[in-house]
Image (cartoon, rainbow, N blue to C red; front, side, top):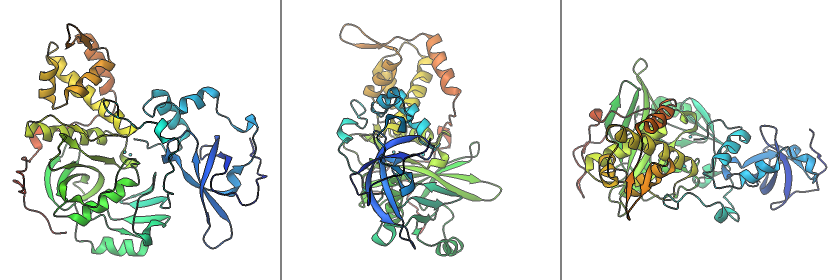
Length: 416
């Protein structure tokens, strides 16, 4: 199907057109911004595909715009359009996004859990995404959202980022020179976990001691997490950086991280979670989630993620909670919710939410109790084990809780 390219002169922000998406599907989109292509008089348009998450927003040439209003211009069925307006956590919407978004790396970030309310987002206008790609490590990665990098970097189409010190650069020549001169071959901070079985290591970085590194991490995360609030006062946070390592080459590569407040008034054990798109759907996101709960177990506290949580993050949490809770129920099917929460460090609220979704919670005489057969538990666990699921070995964690106002056991930090 060919688009009708007879468009009015000078399309402007606010205009709506039919646009051919990267995967060939035609869909309505609103122009949010225009710009002139470097070295020519051709125009590009930053468009938002209506009823889709803003991670799909992109710059397109004028040739992909059409003013046609015929129903034949769209290849989407009414059922698909209805699905696209559902809650961001709906299964149908998730399938629709994966089918229509040419990026295969969607995680790659709420009522009881406070997922993002689509109705509240209808009039939301995002900042224009000028940084379209980043080069980090061995990957060139498409960016999803705007991030407030300094003015001289903010409108670069491509940024180069060092995966060890997180310094960002505009030119490839500068980046190549930096890689040869960078003193770091791993994140600053303290290594608190290394697992040769899965080839991963986790470093704890104190925001107060490595402020620039942690600020750069936050800027990077904002490129992929719409709900991420950039806070340059990182001193009150700890950052747990996940690296992939190769013993043969002695190289470490950045996968993602999570941060948490040193002293959360609400008991949050995770504030922000990022897994870069090339590493998504490989189990690393749930690995970081499990690690946050293993730290809570060492602290002997019940924790949970800071709210609100993105739609993709919500799915990862539900998957981990299901796995953690069912593994306990497999050994002890008759257990009270409070005890289940104490064993897993998952809040009673999240325990109830997860088990209720599988019909494993019953209400009787003003109380909740677990009601699950071993057959039902085994069936759910079998479904999870069929997916990619990396597991933390608690015995390999070398960490102790920090005392308020002190650096804790692992106070030695590498220079940055």
